[in-house]
Length: 114
Image (cartoon, rainbow, N blue to C red):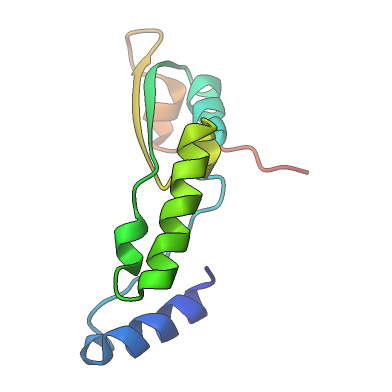
């Protein structure tokens, strides 16, 4: 959802939240396969990636939307589509056991599609 739309929706649902709740969200390349690729490219071994498909409660204020979100999440979970998960738990460790170049620079290299 674009940030401008999220801000409007938040203000509509919680009018008293204007200027208090909400934040600029950046989700570029923020899905399981891209995170896995970025970590491996930067010297990490993936121990485990757990996907969560349970965030429909965000839409509990409007039952039809909640039911649609629940159906979507149950479908993506059943089909094992980690890239469409609403949340991820990633456990990774550095392969070399020491300080990697990525850790030295404090940046993780994420290649963007051409």
